[in-house]
Image 1 (cartoon, rainbow, N blue to C red):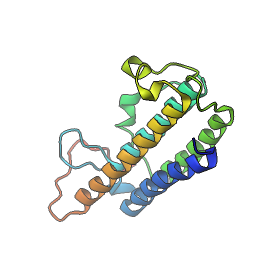
Image 2: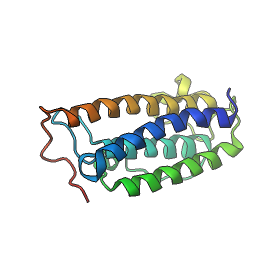
Image 3: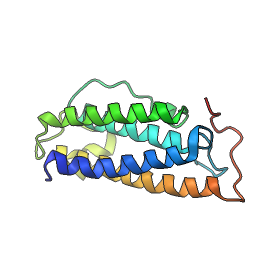
Image 4: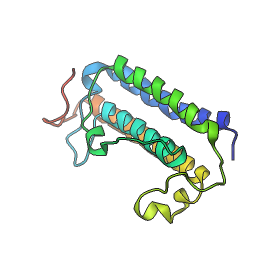
Length: 164
C-alpha cells in the first residue's frame, strides 16, 4: 500500500482535473448535460465523486455515520466557487479519514450488497482503491462530457440543472 500521502496525490490528480474542467466551463455550462441517456452535468459528476469519497472513506473505512442521498448527487447544481469549496472540504475530510487507516484490516463497516464479498470489501485498502477507481472513471467521463458540451453540434438536455 502506498503511504497516505502517495494515495492522496492520485486522488488529487483526479479532483484537480475535474475542478479544472468545471472552472473552464463556468457556472452555466458546468450545470448542463448532453442529451444522452444517463448523461449528467460536470457539476453533478464531481458532486457525486464527493459523495463517493464521503461514503466509502468516511463510512466504510472510518466507520463514521453518513447520510447520503446518492440519487440527489446526480441532480446537484451550483457555482464553480461552491463546488471548489466542497472539494477542499472533502479533501480535508479524506485526510482525516485516513489517519486511522489499517490498510490490510477489514473495513470498519462492511460495504453493501455484493461489494462486501468482492475485493473492494475485503480490506480498507480495497475500499480506497475503489474510491480511486471511481474518481478516475468519472474524470474520464467528465472529459468526454466537456467535449460534448463544447462541440458545435451539442444538444443539451432540457431538464439539465439551470445555473444557480
